[in-house]
Length: 293
Image (cartoon, rainbow, N blue to C red; front, side):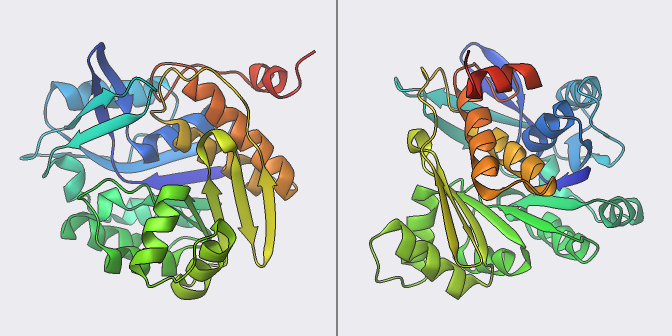
């Protein structure tokens, strides 16, 4: 399995210190830990933070050859504050290096050789990276859109365009209701709004995470649910990204829909029980968590 992602790489700056982050990086870092061959297309600044990110990515055995260095913009540093329930708020500086990603011939080649290409909305906030993304999407066999809304860094028109490129879309329930309302949904229920978004945005496979209540996967008319796992939340940073990594891993291995959700929900929950987006979690630990003795 070969998976390539596009978008932001950054330092999450917690009160306790900096941790590696960025949704596209979190996804492929976890997929690499699960055994997939992974690469990321991004951009860092010509600074100490950028060099440290590059080293961290290499330490995680993710292919970093397609990470560009910007001569002007700085490496992204995102201030993270946590509520008493572990939910995160982010202060994302604009512009930064990943707003200037370019579409190279090498990136096109890597994407064309990948089984799936993962992209999000945040790195499309600037015209330079957005233009590169739209160009690179032409080379992808299978496209996965991680909505990942970070106000005020998105536009409903651009989001609808990105939906149209995707084979599978992942978002959370708050994002689902926000987008459905923005596009004119008259409905209130989860299922009705999923169906509305599918009909209005051109993608017929939609996965919606429901926080502590699990997730639902709408696959061409069929709904599958998983109720999630009860854990003690430390922080939710990267939980959704790791859910998506687990989802992709099982989806690309042609697992049944319920097994896809069970594995993805387990990974998301386990990460939420740790600090930061990329804790060390082994395959055996995931199995033990899902099927305790």
